[in-house]
Length: 323
Ligand code: ASP
Image: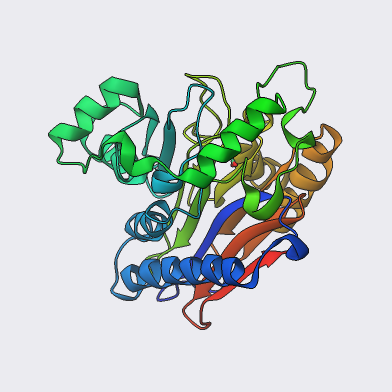
């Protein structure tokens, strides 16, 4: 096997949706591409300076969390009650250690909180007030709810309420995606990153505000290890985005890894099967980025578009939006 030592790869996504070029203004498109590029450069800086894959995914995600354009951190969508409830998780492929926070409302960078849970607690997932209390002790940055307020997002909530979208039922009927998810994956979103560092270690991380008009207390796939995020040095690192309930039911991130481990699928074959066959047949809309220990990567989605990008030791950052 060709050695990956001294080589790094970083792949990111900024969510899926009906992202169609005709609906996107030139300015908005440029703004999205710019943030994706900065995110890649920030993560790459860590990898170039011999930092770990874990630190690289955190750095890349923080940039997207700090931008109002993406549905995570500052740009998080609103719940039915008009609040922002955020979820995030991170996993280290070398140790299988993981950390997650769910339904947090004041944390500036939920991805850093997830990492603190991984590093400093003996648990994997902390939720709500308990999560906030714990990471406050670790020195995590907090913000008032007004920091997360975005007029455009609030209008999306009003619209979703009027159309009675996104109150998810569990009958398998996909109400959410019948809505017009125009211009930038507005009702979906989520940001994620997977990295391979020069020591051959993989990591994955995902952060989200969830889905517009979600019921209070609803937690999606993003903070669930194995559903929205998974990393294992023997197989791959995966970060998902899409209609979370489907990703939980299908344990998507772990499914990719399991197909590689038990059935010897390549990363490409595993993603093609899960995204384009399994989920597609269930109307489970979404996508994922994944990276294997040899540095092979995929950015796969069954929607019109996915904000995404990649940078490697040998190639400059490349960012894309549409199919
Ligand atoms: N998967 C996220 C959730 O269901 C949403 C997204 O990726 O857009 O919370």
